[in-house]
Image 1 (tube, rainbow, N blue to C red):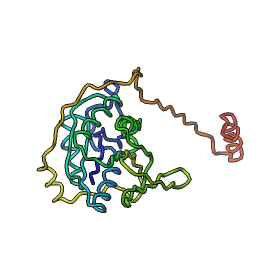
Image 2 (tube, rainbow, N blue to C red; image 1 turned 180 degrees about the horizontal axis):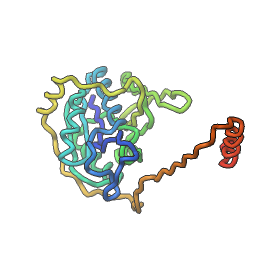
Image 3 (cartoon, rainbow, N blue to C red; image 1 turned 90 degrees about the vertical axis):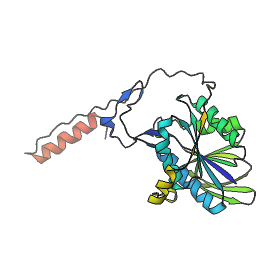
Image 4 (cartoon, rainbow, N blue to C red; image 1 turned 180 degrees about the vertical axis):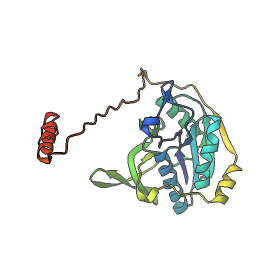
Length: 251
């Protein structure tokens, strides 16, 4: 069995919104780079599945050479190999086409896991586009995976509970976050071993971009107004507060 996990290197997603800055419609390069949060959930799920099924686990990413040092964490967590498709496009169709090329190159991938959405653009579309290009089944919001013979048994997270599904054949699954797939912290020995692991670099292709064109990217502007009410007469304060809440239609 061969499992592939897609991982994207993104700017630090814990930067306070007040400190966030854009350059050329993307996060400023000064921010620390890391693997996306949901992608780490997918990696952890892949490692658990690898251990349970004695499978091979390959990490695939689309990005730049400088991403390699960040992506080695996925190897330290339990990945067997790292393949980096070289490219800098932000178009989801181009990214999916490049990832497909890498998966086709491996030749024997049975299952592809990906975080439910990236931690930078939050689009959550590349995995479904990839599934369409591969001609494989796609299931989103998966929280648990189990292999039973020729079947995959999966749990799909919903707002009001869980839906249990099964399928056979190859598939692309988007992984959501649950307590059971919180990313493990690699041990020091695994971190050092990951640094020595060779990385397969694949030259990217131009691909066919989507028809929609990005016009602009903006940071939402938050405005806050603070008004102090007199407290000498608490009855009057309460009356004034209720009046203002009704004016703003909060009551």
